[in-house]
Image (cartoon, rainbow, N blue to C red):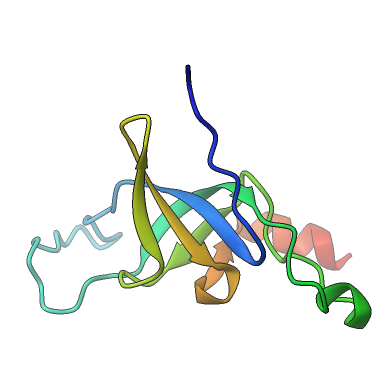
Amino acid sequence: MRHHLRPLFDRVVLKELDPDRMRRSGLLVPPGTHEPPPQHGIVLDVGPGLDWWAHVGVQMPVRPGDHVVFPAQAGNWVEVDEERLLVCRVTELLGVLERAGELEDASV
């Protein structure tokens, strides 16, 4: 039986994407550099938010399927059914990755 991790409050569950160490310029960044790059992941599930959010009109800024960037030290790693997942607060996320065309369509 497979399990589903449902986050509570303002937390999100992420699955990390493999880090891309090849830059557009063709430069290969070796593993073991002193400063770990921000991590990339896919949002699997989001919590309902906090009680006071509805009173001030705040909604969860991410939804399942969003590609996000987060710092290497964000949240806590857990293993569910042999799958490594990150559970962190939504405020720890650095941003949502979107294609440039999606941004232009949204502003029109």
